[in-house]
Length: 366
Ligand code: MN
Ligand code: MN
Image 1 (tube, protein in one colour):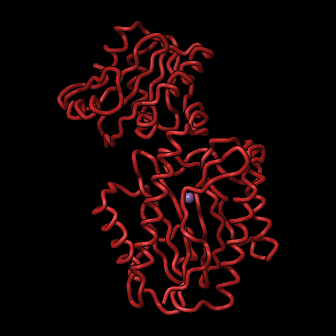
Image 2: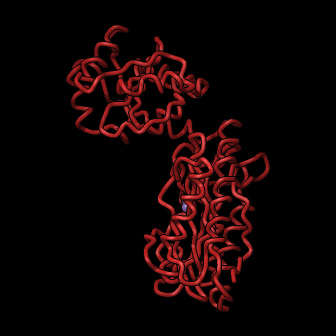
């Protein structure tokens, strides 16, 4: 449970005259309550009233798990045979009917919004809490940073397993399966997104899908992966060579590495998200490959793998100590080569510290 951030949220509610905030995104519920769950189509909700105790509302089968989490306020539940919205409305109305209710407009479905407004016909639902939560999540607490560090350690372990699994004739899917199998045996419950292992030309698609392609001599193999650990995500990319790379492959690799290192060096409080993107983009453009770096430099990371902010030219957001995000330039030349190098980091007083430590010198496997 994150009482400090709930207090910050209440300060915002107080300023805006909002009497109740309804949080529906499971990642955001976990962020405030400490209770992690994927409710699928059932209703999982966190209600934070300005002047009363907050409460979690879960499917009945989850009440015990929620009570055993770090959440220390009441948990209410509903059976599959009951109408959850009637129960929610009753619980809220016991505290008085709120005049202004904030919802997560980026997460709440229109169907659920319609139901809610039928129960609270005289309440104002215009306030959107999504951007407020995004801003609260921007600066991580020391406790959150230590969790991100631990998740990063697991990503390093995953890469090591992946590198060892590379051999001539081994398919992308087989390497991926080996990584996830070994991690699960070691106690990792889930990856933070579908693991990418892309070899040769396949790596030229930034979000390609691993398949039956086998590693061949002279391939560059791209790994992009992360784990969820204590509710926090990691995200790392390394590109390695199987057998001696060509001069062209080395050239592309070194340009991406230079861009990644220069951007990491530039990270410090006071620079903007857009300026960081430009540092990396200028390096790649300087070598004439600008058109092949076709995505933003990075994204925030925390309880979800892609959070605010977006590191892209034009974003004036000023970087501050405690912010956590990825630096992940790449060059993708269709049909030829794909290289990306990615670390996530936290901003310190004078610079930054990466969550992942796997070497970035071009690793040549034999
Ligand atoms: Mn990323
Ligand atoms: Mn990634």
